[in-house]
Length: 393
Image 1 (cartoon, rainbow, N blue to C red):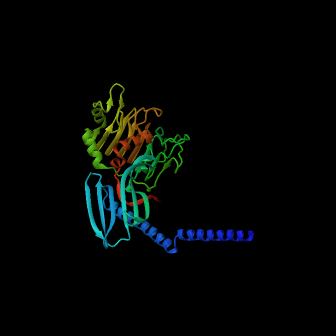
Image 2: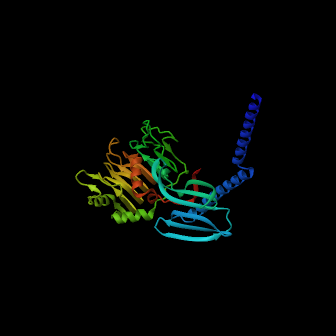
Image 3: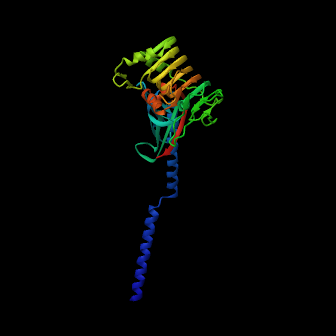
């Protein structure tokens, strides 16, 4: 009886093992099924990639594109590509056309936004596109495989490196006298960033540059380097803004004091009680040459398309100063007093004499840039789409 019981128990165990093995074999996908899943997944990935390429084509073809909805959907023996575009101006474009047979379908969404990035040491709003593309096999409504890819990129080139220096000269810089003070941006450790950059020569008589009369080439000053070019301003926007504000003038020998006095009459711009400016929105645009003297103060953007001569004492300009040629003759200005230009000075040729003081202040530059939008200050150049980041999700 004992041997009979052991035999029955052994048979039960064998039957259990056979049943369990059958269940496992039944649940295990076949090699053919695994291969099919791999093929479908790969096709879905390539469909997502195809959607990306198609979206990039639309971005490159339409520089004003703001959003895009794009899809390829199968029908009978073909596929229908459909898209809707919204441009920055609000213009809406919708179209569709048939394409060749597709192994599946894809859906793509493109969105445009401004992202804070560090460009030339200045934090600015920079245009960025996000493209999300999803591939489906065999179709969106009932798929066996789905793959998604997301990229970020841009198609805009903005040259902001010149704004990182206290003085950026397109041609040359000359100093007469040793009392001027030029300082780059003060760094966290107390030292200074590069103060002067010049495409051409800088005179051999140096004033106090970054706290020393013996500045180091390549560190405190950079000369005879044509790597960077004068930034190209968005002339159309800036001129229209100055005209709208009543701060546009044309001619020779324009008195900047009169233009600034006109701006001070607007209580939304200037507080007479505290003698302070309450906005960074102002743009002075002079189509010609100009002069500035006395203790006149201004903050914002000053553009001189000709020569300018600055004399007198006091805090002259906070913000961005852009001129074809600058001749600064300071009379009795203390080198420890208010600077003539606090922000950035960009000129083709600069001749600084006496006790002029120019300091780099990136927060002032950012205030002007952020108010107007960087692409309204500097002419943006459209380029082919460049991928900044890629990820699968």
